[in-house]
Length: 203
Image 1 (cartoon, rainbow, N blue to C red):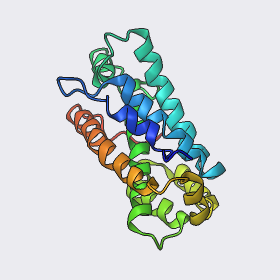
Image 2 (spheres, helix red, strand yellow):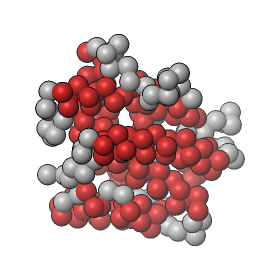
Image 3 (cartoon, rainbow, N blue to C red):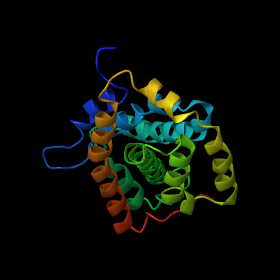
């Protein structure tokens, strides 16, 4: 290994995520989220639901961005366009996609923080606590039940840390990822809340 961790590609994207005016840029934000997908793979099939959810929402937002990159250069412009056309609350909207992408990233940040802060916790315990504190309140009964089952299928913590490790600095990169992306996720929530769009639940 060359000393880089699985978090390095995402951290690189996050360096370019803000415009000179301090706005979140669409492409680097989505790329940073996309670079976390290989980390999710390390959980094995247990995190298939989370991975497909994140991947699907990134694709939806990317597709809209690609239709007019100059217009949708800033992340929130994707939402503003839908607010203007009164389509923001549609289940297939970019607004809904951004909301659920942000929530899924909240879950991952909580999970990574649990792994850093609670060295004695099993991976299943860290996953369950993270789910309960982030996604659970937005999910219906069926999704909650599915999650309860898959959280029991995650690998052994030691094995997982070895797989994502390969470098001594994996914990510091994990912490750096959480510290860097958390304010962006908070910004997303605040923006959506101002428009009354931060509390949509799963159907």
